[in-house]
Length: 202
Image (cartoon, rainbow, N blue to C red; front, side):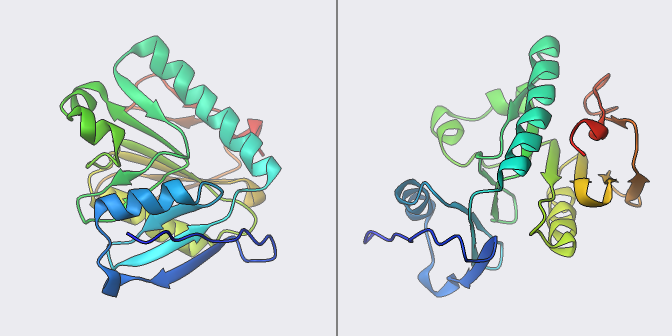
């Protein structure tokens, strides 16, 4: 694959979407694209659209770090799964390559993957996913992404919107619950006993 690189321009919107279906990017080509442009984050939709995202703002990064830390601490204590940060890519069953802001996978599912699959964009949808809305994110785009996770096998999803102090909770085959400025959001039953206080990051 010929080297492709992008110049980071902070005047650009938070994300750009390019149709690259005609290129037929292979898994290896997509991986190489990500490696050669480490200042950007890429996702690939099931429809062959390349989503290019610039780094988040500092406050969003702080929020994401706190959220990831809380999930990682619970994961280490329980030992029943593996947690991931926002730089991790997964290949969903529908072919999309997505990077949730935080994710968790049951240990038996993770250990069933080969070493190569674990090193690449693991071919599975996480059991638990979180998307954290930044000021530039479209809420409808994030809601579509959350629906995609659920359609591809996620068992629990949170969409956290600090600007509006809202938490959307997604569960399979159930209506989305919108919580207004909640004191806590529960991970039960997927992450039993895990409770997060979103006001920590409002």
